[in-house]
Length: 127
Image (cartoon, rainbow, N blue to C red; front, top):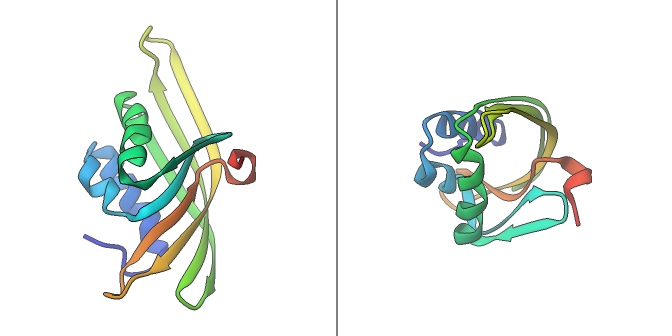
């Protein structure tokens, strides 16, 4: 299933994350998309994004995301959302991550929307 609107991207991401469905997660990204998985780190393209997301999926945590605002500009949109991830570290200690993402999505030729830039920590996650 593809995102038919910019607002569809985050619920689809949450669904695919909960299912630990890496191919479906990657299908939400343009082939040359950029993910900033942690402050100062850039993952460019599907191979690097797969590697970055694998670390989060390995935590087998509960991911929640709530979209808060979308700014449309033609075939681009800036989508904001608050998210949390509650999981356990390899030593079984609790892990709580949270942030406010600011993502750029782009309308594709088929009308679907894909992530071009995924910045889960907003401006604090940029380089």
